[in-house]
Image 1 (cartoon, rainbow, N blue to C red):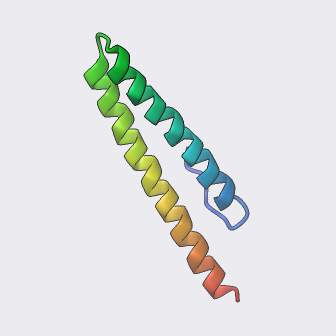
Image 2: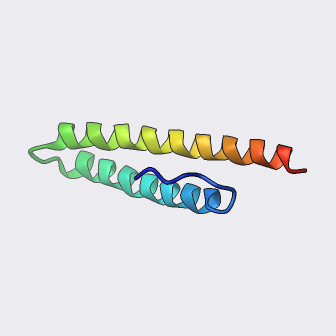
Length: 72
């Protein structure tokens, strides 16, 4: 989903992304612990998704800091 980031929704978006990262990290740890037929494929996909979400959070923080500076 491509939701436009605004000052009003950036905090909620970052919290949502952080919660999703937490879930994916637990999933990766479970895959490592219990293994399974598709362990490597799922783990790699989860790790890539974590990286994308972390990039989204970084972008949102950058947006907020720029927006805050311009509206002082």
